[in-house]
Length: 194
Ligand code: AMP
Image 1 (tube, rainbow, N blue to C red):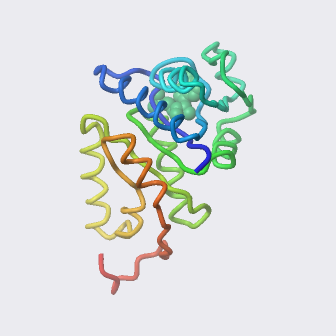
Image 2: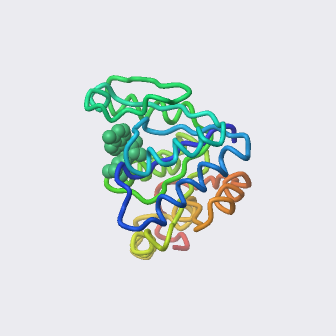
């Protein structure tokens, strides 16, 4: 992987651990010679990870829709910034510019971005790794719910396990580097093992 797209909160969350891990992930990405692609905001964990990569001498590409830029939330110090017309255009560019995706703790925007790249992977539109950095168990409840989607026959087990999960940035990036995409049909044959 040459560049990793990170989805994370435009807020910092209540625990300082989130910012600490955003910094660690930024440093780890940079130490491996990779660049960061993200939503170009200067606020919340988004700003924290961008600043960590820049401070380590790394490369940060931001992609931001015009409407958010006007709200003056854009980070002004990035290596490269693309201002696009819509959220849809932004996500298409994220996908084009990135060799893998990581979701850190975040809110609705982060969840939407995570599930979009997972659904695209499930349909075979891309075969890049998708990682979840589960800082301090933030995503434990969501992971339990995803087990339920498998148990109830709505998600194939192999699609559920496409999402790589770790609490440590280094281990997560290692797993993403080793990722081999499974080729599984989206539609669950009822005779299939669930
Ligand atoms: P949320 O998790 O709801 O805070 O949203 C964060 C995600 O949505 C990020 O990964 C961004 O791509 C996008 N996003 C939300 N708010 C902003 C913002 N103010 N500027 C840029 N991107 C944002």
